[in-house]
Image 1: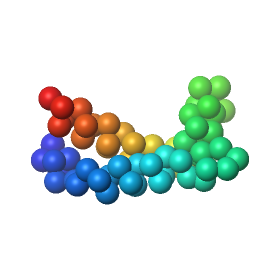
Image 2: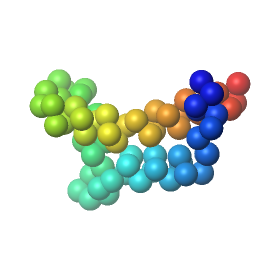
Image 3: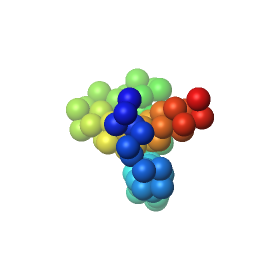
Image 4: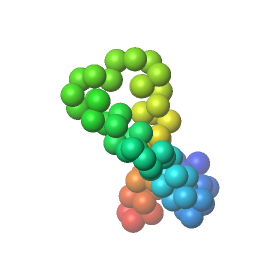
Length: 70
């Protein structure tokens, strides 16, 4: 997990916020794709890729914060 320690926190927060909330209107892609996942409608490869694209920085940020806290 040394690679996680080498990622600076502030740029990671910026990327996670930017991709997590983009596009802001009509609703963020991350919210839309998670809603599709919960309802079992996330079937198209482009939608799965979009979920991974928008969620990865958020997941990495959470992992880094948990690692830093521990």
